[in-house]
Image (cartoon, rainbow, N blue to C red; front, side, top):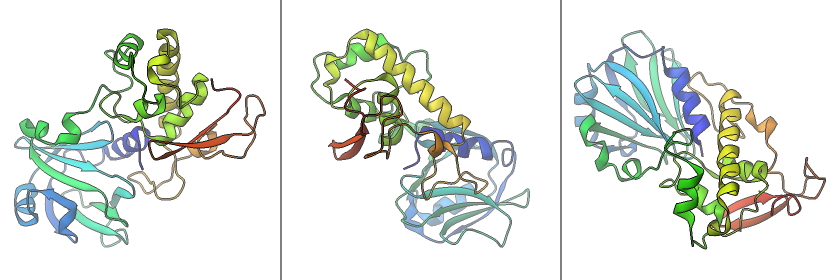
Length: 273
């Protein structure tokens, strides 16, 4: 699933290329991708709207439109938001926006798990997943003291806490494994057992890992592409995720795998305590 770095890369590759353009036409090839409003109303509202800005919140893309409307795109497992020149749109295109600059903005999704909502900009709090998001990982309000306080007395595994979007927005399975490896913390440790110093190390690791992934344009194993259709390269720099059975690059121990909260988790049983 695209996580914060991948969604941020899509935002960056779209920004400056479609901002200021108007949506001249919309082709809805799979109406159920649009969760609100129904497809006909969706087309009527967005037609003629100008794309003012492209923002990201957690794993969501927010396309700010004129007349105070916002297009909320959640890519989920295999969704892609691609720029293309007609008629060469992606094979799994589900919605195609024809823009005034001559390009097409194509939402493609082979497994059709992603969603699109069109909402008045002052009603975004009505979208539960978006409204409940915690602070962004790089936000000043997200501190080790805050995390230490939120986790106090909790027996939930620290990795599961990292994956809780109400705690930190945008961190998923890949970057949780990587962050815990960098910080040297066992993923199954109860979150409440971490000291404030350990939370400081883990928060620093989260920021370092995400910054690296953004710099490498995201992680691509199979489906993820940015808006230009290009893969990321961060998979070449991973230390933990997907490394089960390999030697730890830090100590040489064999990397192990467990399941936490239904998510496969790779870690070093020697380095991570």
